[in-house]
Length: 516
Image 1 (cartoon, rainbow, N blue to C red):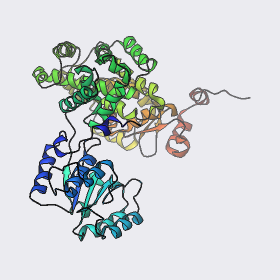
Image 2 (spheres, helix red, strand yellow):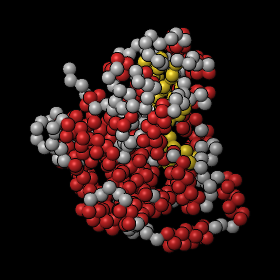
Image 3 (cartoon, rainbow, N blue to C red):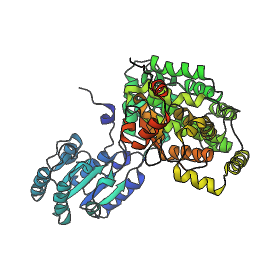
């Protein structure tokens, strides 16, 4: 069975490691001057070389010519470690061996001398998965380790490791690789494999890998099995199921022009073409991030990874947006990307979060902040009531009918502040005022995700701020689903309904009918 490319081209010496020079130099010097630690912690994102460097360090320690910064790769020890069958280098997956019994077993065996090699090396992968009891058992051997034992622990979540363990390790933080570093390494692998692939396709792979060399090599292998045909960027996008740059650009342009028909059509194509919606959200985020940076200062284009053609297109597109609107769109896209981790309702989630961005504010966008602030000051002066009247309204609360009469004004104020928030708030219905004086707004159970969005502190603050401006009274807001039996649970609402509503009004409210 042929080896996967990421295993076939795994670095065997420190010189072959890509992008972690700060770690490589430190470890080589410690071996050169015989300053060998008894415990190392390798922390960093996936696919950045933690396990690979751990194996190279084990070879350097046990090489027949070692300890040496350059293992020979020819002695029995080096060859066995490379093949994963060394008796004295034990690799453990902490995710499946996370209990105290497994660590006790390690502690007892660690006291025994190596069978053949100079050091007994334990490589514990994903060490943060150990239980608290297992960490306590490991701590004992780390406090008083035998001279012949070296622990190398790797983790993607160092914050989960107890400080008592961290304080006894030499910690090395692995960084994500840059796109240029990944592209250079992929080009070498493609050349050795005799494959024909363009630089644009390699850059696309590096972009999708997000700094992980292992992920990028796996994507490259996926493309190379296609055939002998040269793989360009367009073919790579189709094979990997990614939206094209032109597709992303067209969608962003439609959004800038408030062209809902075009935007909705493009959303439907995402699912018809079998594209990954979460990847589309990431591409949009990257696109609007570039737009925001170029809108703020076009000179930023000098440090962005853009071709001249892409730069010219983005500069032209920035004319469709204000900085404020770009920030709102990016906020919404961040929420969308997070929601799309569960792909069960991806079409509905994308439509509900993206379509409101196509709704143009009445009177156009407010570009200057000063006029808006001036208008708000006027409203505050206009709404100021005599002191006695204001106290009276605060003591007795505000009548629900007054809230309903001026609710459209609240929606208009919210829309000026944040268009997407107004679109969500418009789905809510006024239920009443509960016994704690809170304005209760209900949403259908099918829109429960909107309820969660409205309850987020920034959105709730905007709603309550505009309510105070319109009614002149600070009224807290509570959001519920329509299935909540709020009227029965809150006597104040119940009594108001009985006193203020006639039988005909109650029948119309619940869409019922009178039985004889």
